[in-house]
Image (cartoon, rainbow, N blue to C red; front, side, top):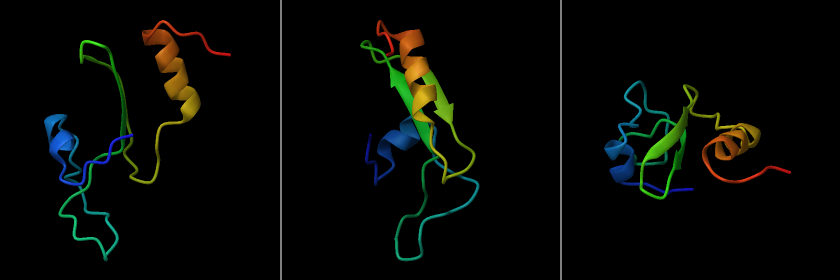
Length: 77
């Protein structure tokens, strides 16, 4: 989990939500990131990414676990 209030990492990955601003009215954010889940290997390479078109939806944990099992040397239960 990453908190990126200044959108520094968001911009480096090209994940700034340019379509619409969906922050609550009380927040002073100028933009929000596209909801994304990334798996990054030990060398820093992005090996898997899941983007959501809906800012209220996140990656299902079972989908992330399956991706982890596929890309890393782990075994699920």
